[in-house]
Amino acid sequence: MKQIAYDISTLALTGAGTSTYLRELLAALDRGHNDISPVLLDYKPFFSRSNRLLRVFDTLNRELVWQQRVLPRLAKNAGCAILHSPAMLCPLQCDMPIVYTVPDIYIVRSPGAFPLWQRNIMNRLFHRCVERADIIIAISQFTKNEILELYPHISEEKVIVTWLGVHERFKPVSAELKEMVRRKYALNRPFVLAVSTIEPRKNLITLIRAFARIKDRTEHDLVLAGPYGWGSKELYSLITNLGLDDRVRFTGYVDIEDLPAVYNLADIFVYPSLYEGFGLPPLEAMACGCPVITSDVASLPEVVGDAAEKLDPFDVEALACSMEKFLQDAGLRQEFTAKGLRRASCFTWEKCANDTVAVYNTLA
Image (tube, helix red, strand yellow):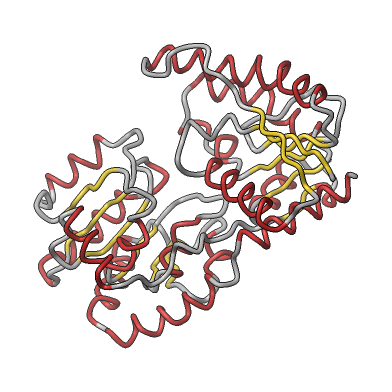
């Protein structure tokens, strides 16, 4: 039995992204790999995270002190054979092989979208983490290509693609469950759905502008489901200026148990993101039988294949026309529902776990 150490310090910080990957990977390993004995190493906050400034100090302490000095020692003392780090950084000095999962390199590609202190950390340390890791897991071929393009001295064999999975909860659900969730979130009108953190790279500005062009020709509302991020003032002002205050709904964070029903209730799902290392929401929507319109950039074409309508994320008119076309054509929606269900079935956490164990075996 192999003892594998896991840095789980991100689990308590967010309900998406790295936390989803780590949570679902560990669950799949527990279901299907008795030869793996996970050792979960967690960080205890040193500062209060309720205060923004103290939260920054706490993040610095976690990434520069705990991950670099304490984490390797804990893994060694536990007798682990491998340290798997799915956090922003991995330890630079460690007495055992390191598997480093890199979801994307957006902070390197678009540093202006991040705070100065975070940019400085990544500029100084990320390339060293890429060099130190024994194997890098990229969650898409797109992310692998990005890494190799920016760091051409890294061996291609060192970067292994391991796609994410779609949880089995995302599926067509009963009419009773849909009605319960409809009432809970007051989704009383037919709607177009977008699920994401409210932040600039999700490109919701383009979605709002496109929806404004068709609002008078459809009875649908636009529902934006997801936690509030940053840089949203322009978005709210635009909604008001375009006269959409009564047509755009913000649900905030949706409970994970309710999210499949929200996908089921939507007539179409739109995801015009500018950059994704993988992009789970389009697959989740497909698995629930909801037709998808998404961007033709980054990893999204790789993930959705031919099962979604793919568009230039900056083309407002094309997005407006596509949404109107799908909303008016039930046959087209049924066609993409069938394609989406087939495509989503190709992505499972069991396969992700199997591919990850294969990575461990190459180091063992």
